[in-house]
Length: 115
Image (spheres, rainbow, N blue to C red):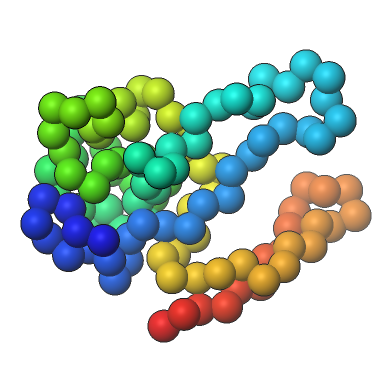
């Protein structure tokens, strides 16, 4: 992954966990939301990402485009029109399983790293 000509793929984009609502909810406010992909990507390590909008405080989970420009999809679009992930995980990890506690208030996620 490159952004503004700089290789940022070592630590970006982050892997995302998005929340899509309760499966049996009849009026789901999360249905049809834009979670970014394939035009916007979640940051994992903001320290290596150049060219972020000045108004944006870069943090993990913030959605950006690969190349900032005047096209239909730019950082401003990503910030204003996409739903950021509920959780962002380090780049190049793959979740293997998720187990919720009895009351669902906590979860354990096991990962497989590709590096």
